[in-house]
Image (cartoon, rainbow, N blue to C red; front, side):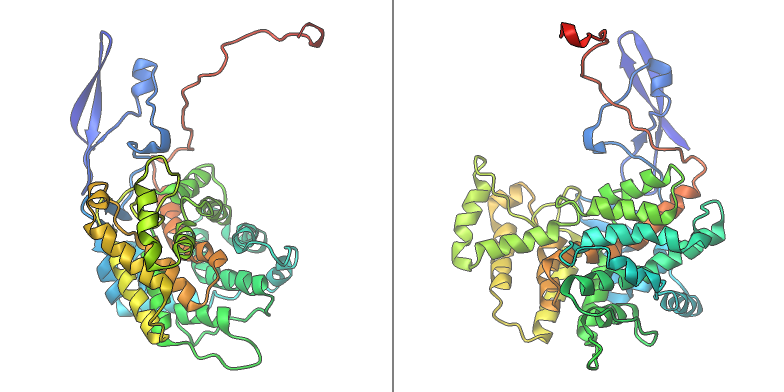
Length: 429
C-alpha cells in the first residue's frame, strides 16, 4: 500500500509515483507505471537502487551490520538454534514447536537418499571435474528423477520438492566430493543429525567406522546457518528470475548454483584462502597491505568489505568464534594462515585506511580457514555454500510463486548500438 507520493518532473511533465514503506529499511518509489506515463525507463546497472520484489524472509541493514531471518537476528539463530530449525523458519515463517521440529527433522532425514540411478549419472563426468560443475548437472537432473514434484501450481508438490532439495543436497554434495577424490559413495545414516550426517558422508570410508566429532559437527551446522539466506543477492535473484518463467524448482536451484559459482559471489571464501596462502607469513603483511592501498596496483585484499555491509559483517563475528573452536578442537595452534588472518583483522579494525573505506572482515575471511581445517579442499567451498543456501533459494522461490503480483522477469535496457540501417549485399561491402 502506498504511504506517500513522490513527484518526478520530466521537462514540462509532472508525474506522481507512489512511495511504499516496508516494516524495516528504506522506502521505495514504485516506478511500475513510469513507462506507461512517460515513455521512459530507469537505468540502474546491478540493480543497486532497485527493489525487484516484496519479501518477508530476510532483512539486511548494511550500515548497522544487521541480518534478520523472519525478524530473528542471525547471531541468536546461529548460537541457539540448529540449521534445520532455521530451515523451518525460512520456509514456514515461524520457529517450530518441539512437535513441529521433530516432524520436520524426521521428514528431512528420510528424504536424504537419492535415486540409485543418480550414482551412475556421476560417472559421466571426468574424474577431475570441478565439484561445482557436477552439482550444476546433478541438481538440474533431479527433475528427471522426481516427476511427481515439478508441478509448481500444486502446493503439495512444491512442498515435496522443497523438502527433497533440503534433504538431498548434502547427499549430492558429498557424492560430488567423493567422486572428486576417487572414493566410494557413502550412504546417509538416519540416526545422525543433518551436519553430522554430511560429515559422515564426506569423510567416512567403508573399511572403518567413522565417529562424527560433535564440535566439528556444530561448526558445520553454524556454517550452514550463516549461509542459509542473504536477501536478493545475485544467485537468489537468479533463482527468482528463472522461477518467474514457470521453470520447475530443480531447474531454478540449478540456475542459482551456476550463478553462485562466480568468484565474486560464492567463490569469495576460496579467493580469501588463496590470498592468505599467497601472503604466507605475518612478516609479509605490510607489503600486501601497501599494495592494497596503492590504487595503481590491481591487487585486492579478499575477504574484506561487502557489497551490502558497510559495518562489521554480523556473520563474521560468529564465524571467527567458530574458527577458534575448530582449530582448538583439532589442536591447531600455530597455523600460519590463522596468524596471517588475525593480524590482517587487527589491521583492518585499527588502520585509518580500512576504517575510512569501511573494509571490515567479512564471513568469507574466516569460513575458508574453518573449511580447510575441517578437511575440505578449496574446490568444495562453493559447493558447501550452495548446500546451505539451497533452503534460502527455495524459500524465496516459494514466496515468489505464491505472490499474486509476480510477473515474468523482463529487465529493460539503454540501447547504444547502431540506429536502423539497411542490409548491404556482400558484393558491395
